[in-house]
Structures are given as C-alpha cells and as structure tokens.
Amino acid sequence: MNTDIIIGIVVAVVVILALIVVGIVLARRRQISLTDQPDSQVTDGSKPQVDRSGGYQAGSGFSFSQGGAGTATATPPGPGPMPTVEPVLPAQERTETDGQPAVGDDASIPRDSVKRGISEINLPDSAPDTVGSAPDTVDSAPDTADSAPDTVDSAPDTVDSAPDTADSAPDTVDSAPDTEAAAPAYAAGATQAPIGEEIAPTAGRLGRLRGRLSRSQGAIGKSMLGLLGAGDLDEDSWEEIEDTLVMADLGTASTTAVVERLRTDLATNPVRTADDARTLLKRVLVDQLHPEMDRSVRALPHADKPAVILVVGVNGTGKTTTTGKLARVLVADGRRVLLGAADTFRAAAADQLQTWGERVGADIVRGKEQADPASVAFDAVAKGIDSGVDVVMIDTAGRLHTKTGLMDELGKVKRVVEKKAPVDEVLLVLDATVGQNGLTQARVFAEVVDITGVVLTKLDGTAKGGIVFHVQEELGVPVKLVGLGEGADDLAPFEPEAFVDALL
Ligand SMILES: Nc1nc2c(ncn2[C@@H]2O[C@H](COP(=O)(O)OP(=O)(O)OP(=O)(O)O)[C@@H](O)[C@H]2O)c(=O)[nH]1
Image (cartoon, rainbow, N blue to C red; front, side):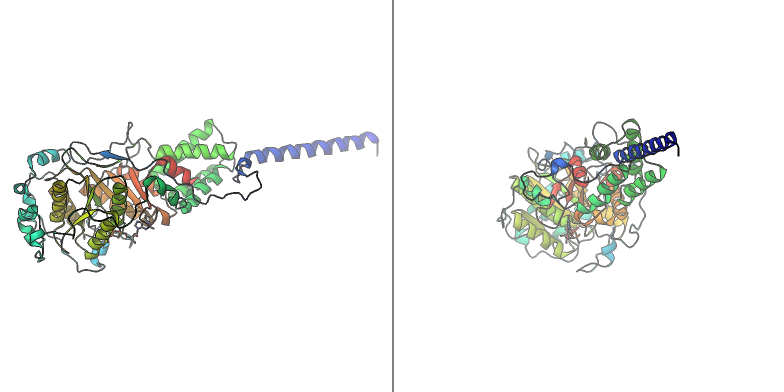
C-alpha cells in the first residue's frame, strides 16, 4: 500500500477519534451530576457528616401578631393578587369521597360515643354572618352577663347533662339560659394550671424537626432535579415533570404555573450544573408558595380582651394535638393561654385537651359530653376575659354528618363567641396524608367560616408535600403552621424558603 494512503488512513482515524472524544465531553457537560459537590467533602480526614434531615428548618421562631379591629378575615395574599386561585366550588351535601376520612365520616361511626344528631338552629336574622357585620355585633355586646347571646338561648341541641358543678359555673353560664342543662364545668383548677413539664424553647425545637420531610424530598426534589438535570428537555420530559408534580399533590393550577415558569426561565437561562438546576427550581417553587403572605398567627391580646383562635377541621386531622402544641409554644413565649374544649362530641377529646392543658400550664373550660359546643366556646371566652389571659384557643368538633350540620354548629360557635370577643384567627387543620380529600374538606370549611390560616399536619407521613401548594391555591389563605410528628414540639411555622430547601 502506498505511503500516502496509509498516512491518509491514520489521519482520518485520528480525526474520527478526536471527534468522538469531543462529542463525549460535550454530552457529559450537558448532564448534571446530582452527587455531592467536592466542597461538601471534609478535608481533615474525619468521617463526613451526612445530613439526612431533608433540611427543614424554620429560619426564625413562630411569628405572632395581633388581630385586626374586627373579626378574622381571610389574610390578604400579600402585595400581589394570587394569580391562579380557583373559585371555591359548591360543596356537596355529603362531602366524603373515596372512602377517605371527611366531614362526617367518623360521625357515622364515632370512636367512643353515641352519635349526636344535628338539630336545626334558628339564629336571628341579624346574627353576624359576614365578616363585615361582625364588629358591630361585638361592639354592641357588652361583656356582662346580660349580653349572653340569644343564640345560646335558642340552641336546641343541648342534652340532659345537668351540671354537677353549678357552683363553679360562671355567671355567663347562668345568663345563657338553656345552657343550664349543658353548663360547662370548669376543669379542676380554674386558676392557671401547674406546668407539668418543661417546655423546650421554641428556637431550640427546629433541630428536632429536621428530617421529617424526607419522603416528600424524594418524591418532589430528587425527581425534579433528576429530570431537569438530564439536559435538553423534550416534550416527553416535560410531561414527566408535570406528572411528578401532580403525583406530589401540587394540583393542576400550581403544576401548570410551575411548569410554565420553568419553561420560560430555562429558555432564557439554560441550566449547566446541578447548582443551576437547584437554584432555578428553588426560585420557581418558592415564588409559587407566595412568600409575601402574612403567616403570623394572630395570637396577641387586644387592649382589653384576649386573642381568640378557633381551631377547626375534620376529626382525626390533628386539631386537639395542634391546639396543644400551639398552646405550648405560646406558653413558652410567656403568654397566658386558656383552652376551650368545644369538641363535646367525644369525651376523650376534652380529656385529651385537658391533658395538654396540664402539660403546658393552660387552663381549660370544658363542657359535659354532648353539651352545646357554642355554649362551651362562649364560656371559655368569657372566662378568658375575666381572668385576663392573653389568648383563648377553642378546639372544635369536626364530626358532622352534613354540610348543613357543620354550618349550623361551627357557624354558631363563631357567632356566639363574637358576642364576647372578635375571633382573630380561624385555623383550619388539614391532614396532609389524605390528599385530594383534604381539599374537599377545606372547601366545605371555607364556606362555613372565614378561614384565616391552614395548619397542615402529618407532613412527616407523606411523600405528597406538594399539598401545601394546592391548599394555598385552592383557599387563597396561607399555610401558617405544619405538623411534623406526634411529639409535643413537632409543630413548626411554615416558611416557604425553608420548606423548599428541605425538598431539594
Ligand atoms: N405523624 C403525625 N401525627 C400527628 C400529627 N398531628 C397529629 N397527629 C396524630 O393524629 C392523631 C389525631 O390527632 P387529634 O389531635 O386527636 O385529632 P383531632 O382532629 O383532634 O381528632 P378528634 O378529637 O377525633 O376530632 C393523633 O394520634 C395525633 O398524635 C403530625 O403532625 N404528624
């Protein structure tokens, strides 16, 4: 073979090899490594510390504020309007779906008590039904025994639970006629209960909450970063991204918004490294959580009255536990707290709340089983005013058969309480593990009372942390607190940035 031909072949082979090498290098550059960056390695030879926390930590402690002049109103979603709030859909008469717990589910099979029927309640037409009209009522209702609400008079569903503690029943009970039969019996020790255990400082608890979001971290963070890091995204990849978000319970509105933002941002700033992908995703997810929303809990007292917080939600979602945990935080913050056990449906619920009261050093006002919840709530607030506490927290029952029953009872609780003091905060407790059904519940409650904040419990037990996005979009109210475990200190303020950090 001629030398020229041999040289030609060698040159051609070299060129082809060079092209292959360049191709491989370029392809690798487009892939984003999701392994640890070198700077996270230790250099002193010691064993590297592995953070299995998922990274959740609230940057600051709980934020408390004072309620407005009137009753609780839905928190305005920050400076800008919520972009994609869906209209609240009309709730069905029966609200349970798919066999999941829902409004009324446990009502049909109560855990430990006979079912209490729902009675018609005739409230006066002038009863404050709307946020706007409420303050007038409050103003015109002096804090005297005479001001006991007519609505309590007409409350029909009290049962034969004649008070065995008539002496200890407060004036307000005497003045609320039909509650004679259902007079709340103050728990032993109407003065501040002894603190049963040391309460960890709120700042110190955050470390203990680390690691509770690891399931959602895998489902959202790892999957999304993996997809975004795969280089150029074709339509199949975008579909996968969409599916990932939907599976994590973000809901269609949030999913669409997130995907559109990612598409737009990627078109102008393609990601080259794992850090790029993380930064982009974090920015988009945090924005979607509306960090501008006011998430402070309105638990600070007014000049002459305590703050009033209603805790509502379907049974089993964690209302009583959340009430206890939040009371604990408030007491640790130096506040005097009074608990109202308006969940009179189940005796154990009031016992549970009383135990919390004893643990944290908060008084409790409780009624007899099946007493009128509105009457108990009224007396709790009256007692709170008399004894000069900073905040009254009322734990309500959620086990009601129908939306009408819920309306009657919860609406009445709020209206009756407002005869004494404005309701500053209505916290809806939702169980993050029940998925879409939680949204069905949320809609029903939002129709009955003006929800001002959401507490998402059991986020530690789900991979569907995306429900946070969905709930906010659906209700237009902020998630203020998250439950991350059954422990007394497993309640954290919700902070979008820290939450997203934990997911990625
Ligand atoms: N893992 C986990 N469990 C929780 C959380 N919050 C509450 N729970 C548990 O959920 C269960 C129900 O909580 P409760 O506080 O009794 O719920 P409830 O809504 O008051 O229920 P009723 O009194 O029946 O109306 C309890 O076993 C709690 O310990 C949470 O954030 N994480």
